[in-house]
Image (cartoon, rainbow, N blue to C red; front, side, top):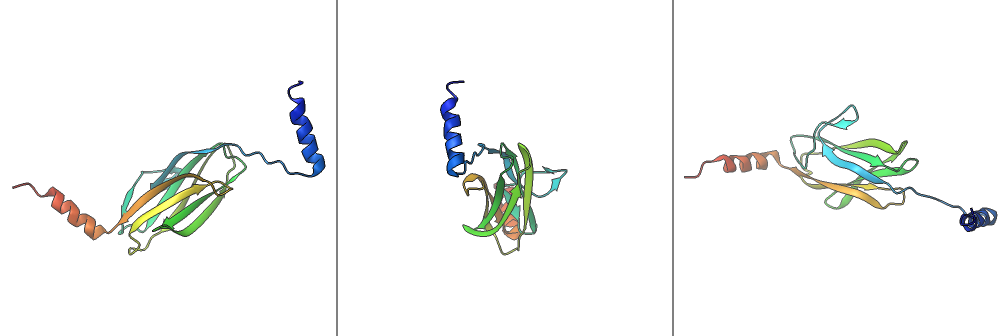
Length: 147
């Protein structure tokens, strides 16, 4: 009990002095991924590339140890922020997802950063949004037999 006294004295002093004491749990993202669909709070697949004949993509995150905090999915295209979706985390294990409707001309790299409430990056993932026509041409070249 004697070892705990300095902590309680500091806490009492902070309370009397009007200081706020904030304690943040260390949290993490157990899973963070792009998917084409979410069913029953779970991604149906995991993708790193999507052709532009698909217009919607989801970003799924399973959070651990962040109960009571807010977490944001920040969507970026070519390094420029495009959208931010903030979630309030309601339990120690919490699954969230956001989605983005993509235009066919927005090919290139899309990154989603998962941010804690202080703006620190917990994790981030990147999706390559590619032209369906270019993809088909590449596949045809790869399938041609060597002569």
